[in-house]
Image (cartoon, rainbow, N blue to C red; front, side, top):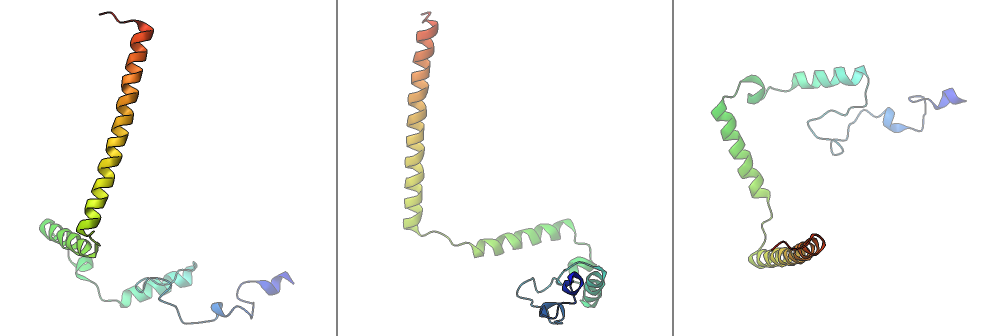
Length: 125
């Protein structure tokens, strides 16, 4: 009974026998990895069919890498959702207010502990 429920022998599991791969669930460039040597050899065969990109075939020099870095930084900055002026002023006011409150609390505690230490150990002056 237990042998009939093994992986690959269960007739109800259609995923095991389906040859199509859903590229939306994984990256379109990455093969689906379920372990085993067949998957590794298929992944090697698929990667051998792909044309090599410039970064895989040529060694890029120092200035090329720096230029690529700045291009990628600019591309990422274009994806940023920048706050509006009103949001920026609101966020700034919240941060300044919070810092002022915490500064006040720390100053009061510092003053209190200083007075307490001087009271316990005496004031030499």
